[in-house]
Image (cartoon, rainbow, N blue to C red; front, side, top):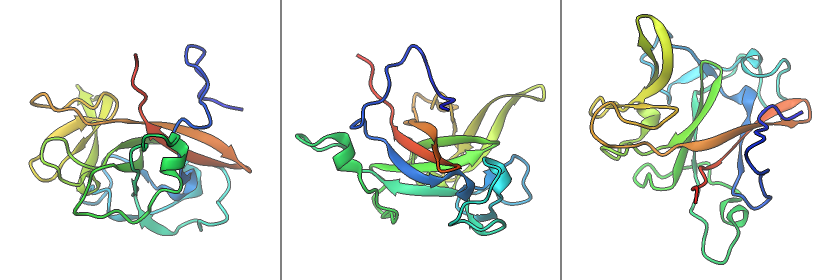
Length: 192
């Protein structure tokens, strides 16, 4: 059963540029106030209770993993469909070149996929820390802070806390994969 069905959106085509980011159980669920520096790249304990009720065959419960995954996804080449251009994604990004890299992580039970490069300072956001955007103690949204200059970006709209910079957002879907949930991401489709 697909829980992400939107009656106002046409179903995805096979060549719409989706690629798998891995099993949902392989992403630690980051909570605000964890007793650490908050950096996404710091290893954390994975638990199967984060998104599914059973442990994945490839991920042992209690295993320590980075809280995020970074993929290099080249833009679709002219003449090729999006799926041909993005399969399979590289899992070893070049830290010197952050272009066309996507950062995938789970914060407070919700999966997020954003550009790995800070739009303000071209710094890797995997070194950043996610946080709740609150007003009088009520969580309104979630954000991520770039550690280079301290700028923050909303994880739902991509807007910066200052200036007119906007973080590029990616679409995320959870799909059933033999009793497990699998995380799929793609570039947000342009309207019009």
